[in-house]
Length: 181
Image (cartoon, rainbow, N blue to C red; front, side, top):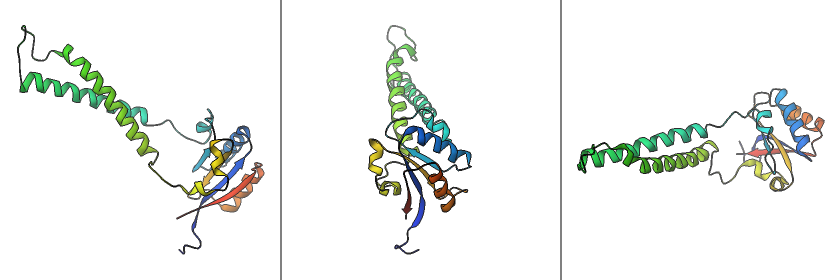
């Protein structure tokens, strides 16, 4: 493939309001498109459900990270105080779990937070310095006052003419081709 004609990555449509974007997203999803995304200047509560986004795996990742942290802390303390350097103070058992609670709690929180950040970065595909949709004219306005809907070309239902016509029927202000490598 020559560099003069990069492959089509998808189509974006710009809308004037959140209501138009929601209506368009609902219509596009109902038409069978699944590789879609929306870009808005503020969170829109019902939008993820409309475009078919399922719940995030990050809470599960954080739970597992927290459990690993708790087991690590408890095991580390038990090994240090009960096995490696046993010290009988006042007739207490070597595995005196109340002493282990503060460090276990702290490492649970630390591992949970670190696994949450790592999971977020991995699931979002970050760090990504450039995405083809960033080259859409006016896209920088999505952080202030613009609303964009994007259909990726890898979607099984994607046909450029059909999607373009659908976007115009949904009263898109502008429809732009997104080209990638």
